[in-house]
Image 1 (tube, rainbow, N blue to C red):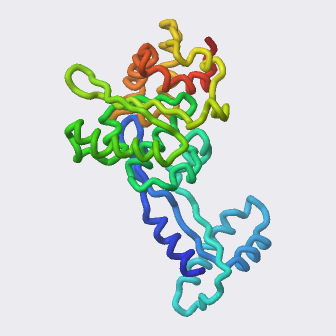
Image 2: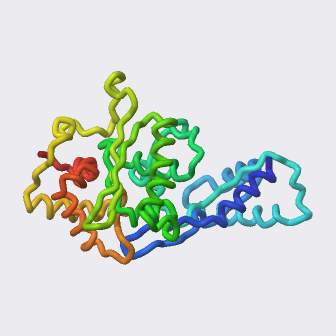
Image 3: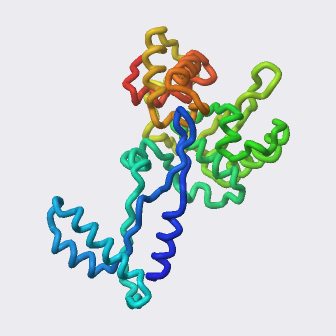
Length: 283
């Protein structure tokens, strides 16, 4: 067990994650460092340094044990090992509020998926499960699916990726999904997903995040005043949950302008409704 724990920690500290920001993609490590030590060492040192003011001394002592434990002369036969990981500071804003920064869904919902694109599109759907509607530009979709250099033809993207993924989602997940490729001019511009939970009417299931005031108006376009569009567009641009909408090199101001356009668009407005509630919008 000790060897597996050490190996897993060594692999994890090498991994990086890409965080989308309004000015570009930030590649950073998940972890700042990993400390390996036996549990009896941890307990003994914690008793020696019980107060928070001694934390720095405590960590330094653990680092010393980590160094000694890595030497060939140290016996590593004891499986009673604890690994302490310290996340990189770039990751902390995203870990401090997991509910708002990460998409939540049951792994059992998609355990039968065999296609990688099915997983990613299902994750995208779950970001908007409270509305059952998502409209995403194809450029952003290609980026999410790592398809920047593949299936440049929309027909190929539809047949090889979207059709296959939606078919599998319909067959193997608790949701049914329909999609449409939306044109802007003569070219396909975005993917529209509409989905709902299977047997939702019979089971009377509803997402805990569903907004009652929008249930009554789910088929109606909310007419916002210019002042409301301006105010909420600016506030929406600062929400981390919508950072994926930011384009490369785009400023918060430019993102806010696009969000204001979405608020005025009957087709795109629904995906922003849950975030309006979060900001305190009342019709």
